[in-house]
Length: 467
Image 1 (cartoon, one colour):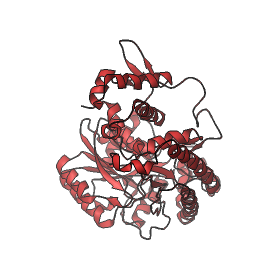
Image 2: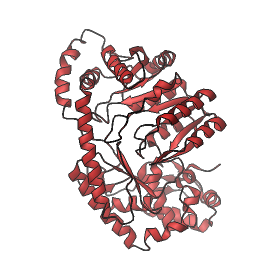
Image 3: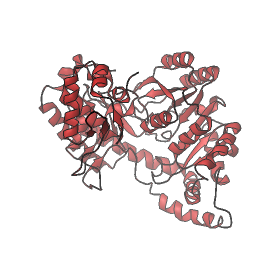
Image 4: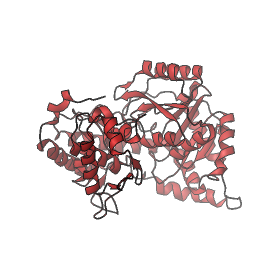
């Protein structure tokens, strides 16, 4: 069984890499948060065996990491992840000059202030209650149920539970129905924190590929039939990070297969309302049956500071969620729920704001990429980001070069289960155009540093293992 370090590196992607390159890739894993401070790394001998490299090469790798402060080593003992002492990395400790592209989120909608003011009488009317809201305010659940019904999935308020954001919802679901040691089907790439949540709840991850042109539906259904996973985590609308949307007929096919093998579908709709110019509106997967559990959030359409999420599920699942929720929280803040009621009453204006901001952000990214030869931006009809094709497996190297320019940019492997997709890069389209233009200028400088330091990346492409 591979160590976690080798799983994150991807053994094939580092085949033949020099000690310096290996050290840089491990550094990227640490800076990305994929290896945590204090985590124990394999011994030199064990890592040499796993990577099929000489022990002297691994000794050199660990020595370089130790010299830079990214590991601590004890003679005859363990090697553990650390962070350097000294000047902070870009983006840490309030460095206002750094641009953080690891966060794909817009600032607040202009209507947030007015919605907050309008919500205050509703909040005042609740002062005579206990203030605890285990399932969520009835008004908010009614509004959410109505939104599902309008989109084609008949829903009632008692099939909704309000949570403190979408990730909170995912963890609540896994706490209620999770089974340690079972398999979980996940898209590759996908939302990194969902992968971490599934890992933390003891699931073994089974990936299925997604690209900008969509899903391999046959691979999804074959994997469901062969692996029979307990859960499957899917982002069918404006998939994060590829931006793809799952076609209607493929939704039905996947849902039917999951129902046949007894797999719970956890459907993340956090990005579902981020439409720019898709041209059609799918019926939610929630309409496909009681085995579908849907998660949503206000964070991407209103503001990240609005910690409001929800779960839509059949009543028996809602009952299980309510039974376990008090073990780690007693509900969601009432003020945010009151504000959410007001915002949901004005969805057309909210949608128009989102469309305008994302259109401008998409154009700014496209313009910036014209200065990076060989880099391709796919059609991006909506969502949070563009899933860029770099033309070569240099994503981690570019991410490290970008940090030297004050640009925090997670590489493609950050969104995967095994260190693959080195030729891909997620660039948010959510920042204001002027901020995006500055970010792209810094990326161009990093790209110049990367390609100017040796061979052109495109010349290496045919020699690299790219998945």
